[in-house]
Image (cartoon, rainbow, N blue to C red; front, top):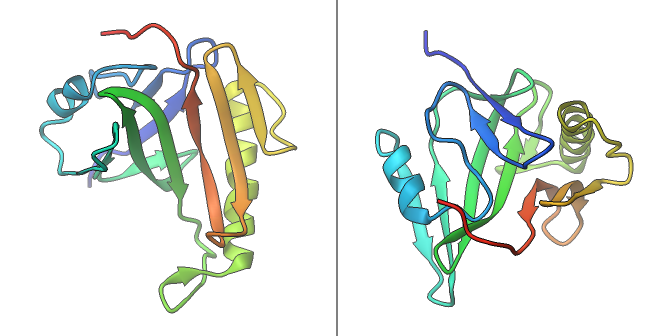
Length: 159
């Protein structure tokens, strides 16, 4: 059996730990550090040629509070600026490959509870602000799906 990799967010810094990986995702870290630190994993990357680029890490058995999770990273001018989180729940339903509204709303509720517990804040309104950035979990009516993640405040680059 594959070892589960728990995703956890440090409330004081916004750093994201992925199980026992040696690399910790930190605000404004260089894209090269992510490629190097997760070189053993399949990565899907795309560059929008406007300063923004994304990496989707294919981490087998990534878990958020015990549930299967997904993680994509957004870089601006080569520095980590945002993480997008996704989760799968056992009662998820879809229509033609897309989650139903009820499934998306359950995912949002789960993400809010889990993020509130990890970060020690209320996520009742769907957002929480920190000195290092903002965490959100909401239903996106335009995309008709759950959306969650971390957006780091602009600041001094690290790494």
